[in-house]
Image (cartoon, rainbow, N blue to C red; front, top):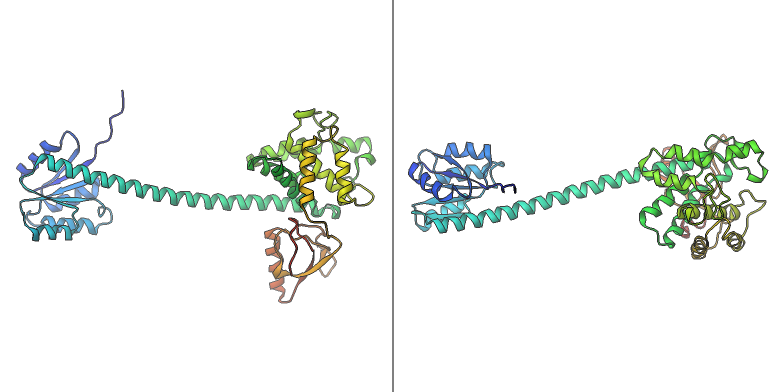
Length: 416
């Protein structure tokens, strides 16, 4: 059985019971009807029930139809309710007064049922269209507010991740800027492989936080090559992807990224850990993270005797296809690296704190007057870091300059 549609509500106002009875007989089958015998009662009922349309006589004692209409329009709660005058005052002067008072239509007595039906139906359609337009405007407003709120939450979420990543980087000078650089390149590789925006975000977040499972490592173990680890150290080391997953999995927005971190040491030949995944069983995002780390370890001189050139690092990654990495992932990495300008890490420029911007890379350690390390060389500045540094400069009341690399983390040339 279908649910009956809700009938529009009409308020009928007339001091003559006979006139109300006539209107009732005409309209009762199609509309929900309310009745008022004078203007004062009409005001009370309209305010309480907010009818969709009001049909009102003009000649009534105490408060006539014109006065009733004006008071309805003065009340914000009832101002939008359309009112049609039904009256025996069939002259242009009174009709003009009716429209001036705020009525939307003017019907002469005796009432013609077809005319009344058509006028009521027309104005109810206009009311529905206006309500729909208002509802759409309100919906758009709410959507915009929601988008702004989600944007702020997203920004706070991203800033929190970057801050946590920076804390991990600052534990070891050789890690400075490493996680952020890994994230930028891995994100580009994911885009080059045609991954969805959501999957790109997961790769980016996984790369930012892939070291988090090492948070409990000693400084000695933190940057030690696996080939130099004792069996006990190696067992501890192999737990870090699982530890990271346990830390991040409860955060719903990072659940998928945590799986990529878990599998960052898997190999397509099945010789990786912790699960020994094989071939296509290794998530593409995890392979992107793995190959990006491998490349940066070589060009940044991590766990090798000295930094390698881009060409050498890419050739080494290419030599691992079918063993560590899928060929398609190495192809995408090569495309991304070749699109980036050559490193100018040995060349730095001095930039006033007020001209710093996000993604600039510190060329030298920033220390306070007592020699305490504040920010390590290689750190990629975030928006929040820039604001903090600028705040320090303003409070000090003197110029503050920092040494940054000539190209930022996105490959753009730093202008002074």
